[in-house]
Length: 344
Image 1 (cartoon, rainbow, N blue to C red):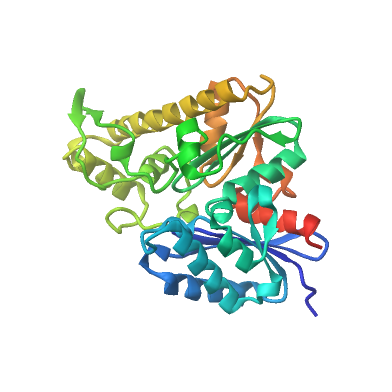
Image 2: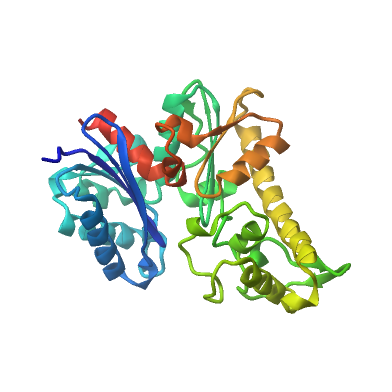
C-alpha cells in the first residue's frame, strides 16, 4: 500500500507543477501540466484532477504556492489567491493543505486567504530558501518560461530585496523575461538583416523560445507552450516566425543569416539579465567566488551569465538528489523537500 508522502504544488498562470517526495523525503515524481488559468478557474479544476490521477497523492501532505493569482481572470490578486485556495480545497482535504507564506511560515487555507499578500507569488522564495539551506553563499537564479528571479544569499541567509513583485522589479530581483514566452519586441526595437537595421513589428509574431530553439539551447520536448502562430517549434517554423518580426519571410535570407538574427535577440536578453545581476549585487554583494545557482527551464542562460560575470555555476539539480526535473520546476521540488523536513 502506498504510504503518504509530501507534495509540492506550484500553481502558475500557464502551468501546474507538482513534485512528490515519499515518506523518507526522496523525490519520486515531478510533473508539469499545461493550465491556462487566464481562461478561468475551471482550467485549474480540470488540471488539478489530472495531476491527482497521475500521482495518486490525495492522502499526502500538500505544500502549496502560486503565481496564478496574477492572471487577468481575477480582478484583484486577493480574489485570485482566494479562488485558487478554494479550488484546491475542493479537491484536497484542507487539513492536509499547507500554504507557503515565506517569512510567515506555513498557513492553513483560511489563514492564507486572510494573509493573501504573504502568499501571492511567493514561489521564488521557497526555491531560494531551500537553496540557501543547502549552500553557503551565492546568487540563486530561476529562469522559467516567463520570468527571471534573482535572489542573493550569504552565510545561508537570504538577502531579500523586497517581497512583492513590484518591489522586486524595482530592485532587479524580478525580471520579466524568460526562455519561452517573452515576445521578441520586449527584447529589442530593431534587429539586423542583410546588413541593415530593421525596426521590429509591434506584434507578437515570435517569442524567446524561437531564438533559443534556433541556437540549439532549448529542446522542443521541454516546451509545453504554443508558439505565436500555433505551428510547431521546428527550425523552419522558428525562422518564419522570426522573419515576421522584421516584416520579412524566412526565404529573404539564408539559415546562417537567421542564426545571426537569433544571436542578436539572445544577446539583448543576456544583457538585460546580466545587468539585473549586477544591480542586485550592488545591493547585496557576495564573495566573488560564490556560485550562480541556476534553476528553471532557462537555466542554460544562468550558466551563460555566470561565465560573463566570471563566477562559478551550480545547477539546482545538484541540490535536489541530482534530478534534472527538480531544476526545471524548482519551486515545486523545493516545497516538497521543505515539507518533508518541516511538516513531518
